[in-house]
Length: 409
Image 1 (tube, rainbow, N blue to C red):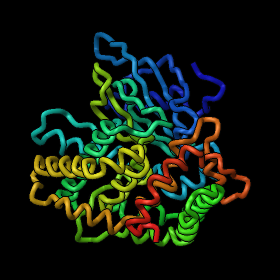
Image 2: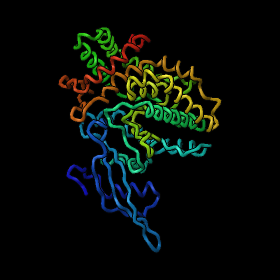
Image 3: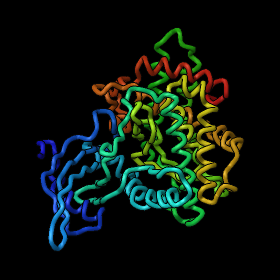
Image 4: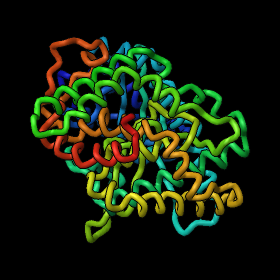
């Protein structure tokens, strides 16, 4: 079943090619395709996702076997400005390489070492093509029981511990792979924000937007508005400094956009989160692990969780990193907790960036999704619709801590 909104390129031929490539069987036949949107409004800003359910048959000399399957197909956004933004940043090429080459290598390392369970970090890659434009075909994790936390809800402590432990495994696998192949991440050495100076105007725009909103509340300490306005003008240089890789330091592949919208959770029979996988690797970068840690901790858990349980969450990360490196024969290379803390202090602007530029998206209702194509263009008619009172309440519990640590100076 193909709706009127289904693009012409999403047809039986694409699905046939994808499943044949992914399963290594070029005799598979496909039929009964059903296409529908894979996400709700506001879940994805720089791509369009389709869920494709279909039937297929495998054949041998004497018989055929019927099966069903479901794919997620990720394609460029419809808006021309957003499409240009994604293309100029090589976002689809980056994600394709992570899913096609790196994730299978991580899985081999993780699942051939001694472990009490199989570890999976991301969906299986099936196929990609850039004709007529870029698209990636991957496993539909929903079929395996994974789902997103409702977009406007922060992660509680249990979800946060599970997620940050998985980040530790992801980082450890990347470190072990780099030990085996020093050129594994040659295509991930340039920080994504530095590929396109449109990010500079976007960063300035967002910080100024939050500063203006804070200024509209007379009972809010106006030093926060003033400091954020200043940071908006200097933020791009601070991002560049915070992301700078130390060539002989402890470096890992960062997910690059490690917030709760890019995580899917599975639950046990009692409804407790039991597993998590990552999606959306368009901004992956080889550098300090502090980048992912700041980004996650100040975008995804509630401010209560991130402040009251910060040390516990960081310990979960370090324990996962340490145990996973040890399983892969790299235990003596694990940095100390003190080193991780020093890295996070050295790269503290990433915490501010996540809290100001990413966290607000958690509070946006589906009918007020921010138009980031306009934001990149810095058009004045973009309202403060994605800066809500709920977000202001949340950020006002975090800014005093940032200020006390001199992270706003």
